[in-house]
Image (cartoon, rainbow, N blue to C red; front, side, top):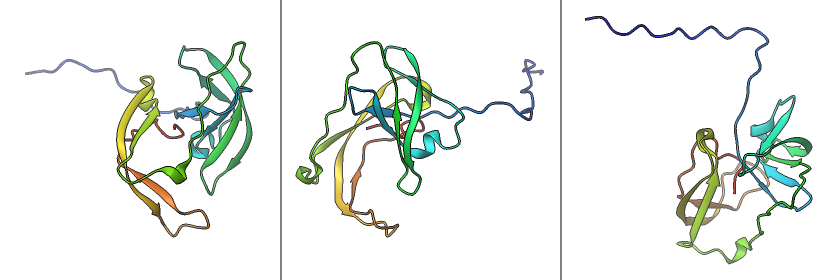
Length: 145
């Protein structure tokens, strides 16, 4: 019993370009975007793909590796939808939450869950008091709201 021959994956050649995938969210109508630092870390160029498929070059405005945050800027020819900031001090354990991202590059995906706990301390530095949620997070959701 012989199987069907499969094409061999060529070895990675030196100098080949690697790509990373992540999510982000537009926080300013001027094209300001927030994402995770690890999504863009080491990038020689950054490209943002909007929900309608429009691809735009992005500029890194600033980043904080310790807290894994990055701020990008894009220029668009049309008004951009923005995420409205909430008030996390009003969150209660059991409240419903959503996680939005682009897992595995398949397109915008929304998962739901609840606030599992507030005030979590990972003892990782000066910025603790985290909110723990149970919404499923997949590879590619990094940086999303």
